[in-house]
Amino acid sequence: MGSTPSRRRPTIEDVARLAGVSKGAVSIALNGHAGVADTTRARITEAARTLSWRPSLHARALLASRSFALGLVMSRPPELLAADPFFPAFIAGVESVLANRGLALVLQVVDGDPQTEAASYQRLAHDRRVDGVLLTDLRIDDPRFDWLTELDLPAVAVGRPAAGCPFPWLDTGDREGVRQAVRHLIALGHRRIAHVGGAPGYVHSAARRRAWEDELRAHGLEPELFIAGDFTGQGGAAATRQLLGSKPPPTAIVYANDLMAIAGMAAAVEAGLTLPDELSVVGVDDIPLAAHVRPALTTVRQDATDWGRAAARSLVALVEGEPLPTLTPAPVTFVERSSTSAPRAH
Image (cartoon, rainbow, N blue to C red):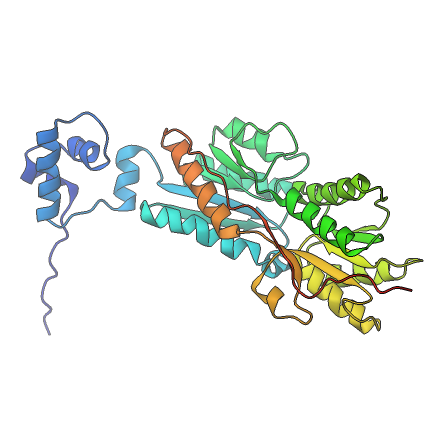
């Protein structure tokens, strides 16, 4: 049985022929660059509209010597990445910007090995798969700064770097969120306030610990009760059990993220404590589950989707040679719920 031949899709050659110009002129006009007269640009635009032609991403890349894609390489153990709700929200913010501009996101997940991670960036650069990259999970001594400088690959960092960052970066304000949490607990009357930190080596883990220490010292208290966690529920529960074995134990704990805080609450209840009378708990992130546990979790709200939008807009401007926008991500917000109260008098 025969089939009806499908109609051939129009090409850039068809647009150029109809408009009476070269393919290069079509590319210049439809990419918004200078170099063609206004009347010629109008004729090309009308020809493209008549033929219902839009340049494919591949065609745009060939004509402009660009990939029209941004990269994000995440170097975390899979179990840690799967447990962290930050990245889906962050990626949603990035995609909301790229989709409106006809750009793509190239996402790669590596296992944490530095050589594997370095190789990922090398492939992205050498194969011209991306025009620039987003840097998340900044590290104390971040080797990516040197790698990307050598590769001449533009980047935007998410978070305040420890030092020596040659790229634009966005301040996410998580230090202030932890300080607000500590001030809240001190105002309630707590004096033994512990901190379960994030995974060692990350800038945001160190920043949140430093904010906890600085705020305690500002109120004449010593930051003695600290245990490094790993941002997972299992790590938060283990750290909580260890802190509750202190003599005397803390009356409040500030966790580096909500997952550890929620797991810590469960561990405290298993140990026979009543929350928040015998232990107040504060998290960071305000994940959707935080409002629905019992007691509802007091936390620091961070808008990861807004961070993604701001980072993507900055990187797009950088790779397209436009002035960097003045972008201030949504400030952190302290959200008081029922997991904190005045400590029970002993």
